[in-house]
Length: 320
Image 1 (tube, rainbow, N blue to C red):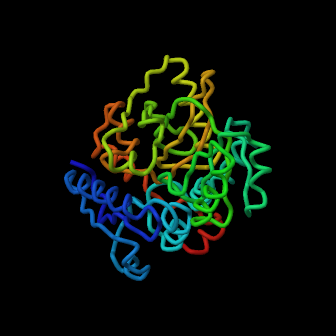
Image 2: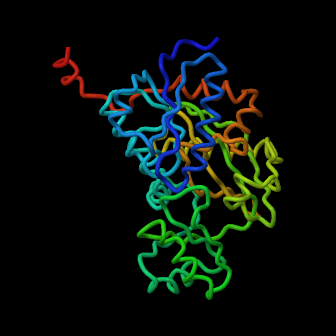
């Protein structure tokens, strides 16, 4: 039996480009929590208002939203104002992690390895990006996930179309050095300091193309968990994931994505603060390899739900 969490809202759906993925994640979390005896209720933030959420009578919420208005700090700030405990990172860490450009700036400041990049604000800077980063390179919107709007550019003739695709999602576009190698990810659980990295997962997609289809629809992608790495390298990647998580101020849970180059060097790509929880998702795979069922994972995440912004001591005394 799970402990009494009270009335729990599973926030899902939303209005981002990742709505369909969030619907799958939310249903999975809801079913698992209900099966564990939790009084859980689905709440679609894309079809209900903030007033509806305020009046729903939830004691805490599990955020199963992905992308804008759910993973980017906006919802987290609202929940802080409501005093409603929630899963995952707070407003600042969520906002930083959602912005791949800001994430890179933080990691570089902390001396963590991440591929070189350029920020594209218009088509006039495309050739400069190629001169700086070389080919192939990756072009993507810095505020989207699930590989939406992402293109691997292998020839200069592809660059303009790749930029225009990414620009549909974001005003600024991120051009990133392409790292040839193996695609890895590391799920994380716990507080900012003292986070625990779960086993490394390796993603082997057809022709190395881990796009939306191969993430959520096709069964052609293979997942190796634990990834076939020697213990020293796997441990080094896990510690790097923990440092990346801490540097951004993340807490509760998350997932760090990597490329491992042909020389065995890991490169940080991005941090997800509200990762997928679908049947194809990676955090449940890492948890399973660590001996944790899907339901146990959901309960562990829910257990850590809290408000993260604390009022100054003087203000708290005035309220008493």
